[in-house]
Image (cartoon, rainbow, N blue to C red):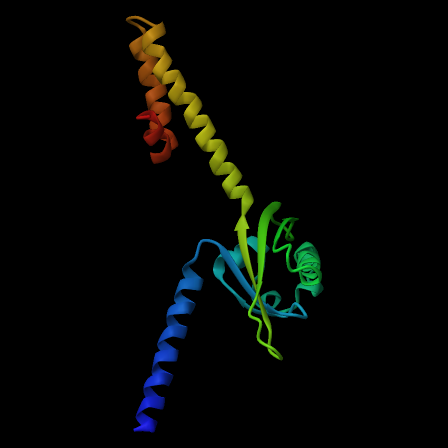
Length: 178
């Protein structure tokens, strides 16, 4: 009976681990798991992209990868004062564009085998998205003003602006109906 319970427990843990791995791999935000010495254990695809990691570099230590020094520095600052869980860093991986990241650190709290989980968000993408929405709002305001300002030929101009809003995507289309 105990053997059967142990087998069921083991199978349950394996299933949970498989689910966790799928979720982490499919997240849009980056997840990095490292040791207190900055040895990298797990990096999901989003974090690899954001950090410019691939191959052997994804198995190294943050402190040994030149362009990841700001992340290592932010970790060390957090480790000295865990109340400051958020950090913002700018990275320039070799041959890639500058990346503006928001980092949040969390510890597993396991004694002797502590792991640090770093959650990464590409703030640059968020800033770009905000800029797109700002432009969409500007176009929407212009669309709403045109019928009041222009007669007759204004319909052609209004159609032009509506076409621009539609080209910006579904968020801009949603704003059109506000």
